[in-house]
Image (cartoon, rainbow, N blue to C red):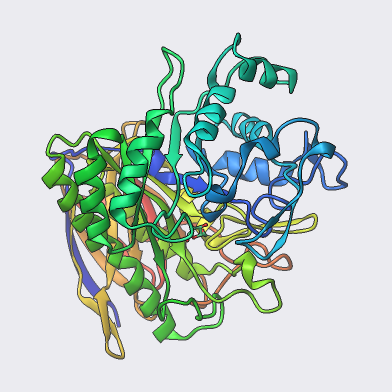
Length: 494
Ligand code: AHR
């Protein structure tokens, strides 16, 4: 019982560059996202480099992480950067009131984050505090980080051990100002944006992309007001969209679900398409010249907290289903690459839809990690339209397209095609007519598993991982793929 689908790959109609920043990450002071997950300190028994876990660092390096957003999230609008500089033993301890009410030792601060970014070879996206901080604090933080010498702040940084200034290519003016960032109206937030961003200045020769705090999922009015009042004072506007099966507050299990939970989650993830399209339509009205980019700087699945964990720590499992949620986002964002120029999955380690889970010295890579790894050729590639005609996959009252995908011409010159089969029970034969590309060979990898709930654990860390794919052939201008049930396949044409 196989499903038949067809497609046309228009390699002769190349589109925009798919920014590598679409594959960005987000690391917040939340649960074990930073403490325990990235940072264990130099004195830890867990093997580390200057306090950063070696295992996590090595795994992240494999992903070529282009950018990391820090320190929040909601934490950003409660963060005072001065608490996190200077000798670690003297730093102020505060309560992380938003996330679990636990002690925040501030041992991971500006120097630790920037050093981490350098070790990882990634760009820094620092989120400033608009909700409870002053424009002066924001200005001084930027000066501390980016000015070479001469000013007292630059000298203070140098006394704290960092001689050279850092680059801060991306700076966020607050986060979720409609909610945890200050419960503002869009009009108030837009005016504050204009004010705060005025004082974010980097030295001549450096560039900083100023990111305005954006809408909560489908709040198109937020985008409208922001663009109307503050559109001329920003380089990018953000939007946050979480896949929350069953709706808010999150209550679905991350690892115990049936086919209804499977399809509901994928359906919810697919909404990102309409969401981006409609936010872009609003931006197009105010900014037809496409000067302001749209950043999906928080996205991912949000389920009920893992049983027995602090609900404020947002720990959850990560299954094959999450890998497909990721592939959906990559495909959709590639299609909107002319406007969508950054995305940051929430979050990197141990929080929400994480790449990596750790427990003490143990570490495991999630299916989402593998999806990011398989899509590496998309980073800075050229978008190629892939027109898919696939029958709907139905379960109960829900119906979604059975197959999803995207294609690019990567920097290595080769064409890559990603195909996801959402049907958990049936193979789908996808027959793709290749237009504008001569290919005689195809190779690829597949991510799938025996069960829709399959996930990696510390005991079984390799249950879900990519394997060589033998189900594709190419001849006479047609790519023929036997797409296994519940799978993601990434192919390379030669
Ligand atoms: O990623 C978790 C939280 O979700 C972030 O702190 C916040 O911005 C969003 O509500």
